[in-house]
Length: 131
Image (tube, helix red, strand yellow):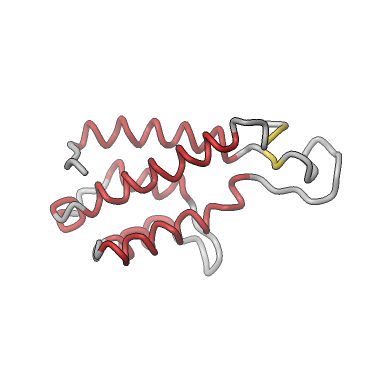
């Protein structure tokens, strides 16, 4: 993991935000969708809490001690709700010296890039429909 500059972070976060914006609106194929067919409606955005929880779990395993405080402050929207877009905006604008200096911010960026890219790739193969 390479320490990123603020300009690099901004570019990466813009790419991740665009990726998530596209994927998060897609519906699970075969389970119904917003166009009126089927019963169960799930969107990728329904998994934001899971994505953030995976990030926090990986941070704990890696000893990235500054991540939980940062993620909770940036993304938490209640007991069972998070905002991945808010987290991405916070990553782009943070000046938290401890988070940046420890490499924990790069850890967060790296994990989110891996997770969101994997989700996008997995769902490019017609698993989602009605975007």
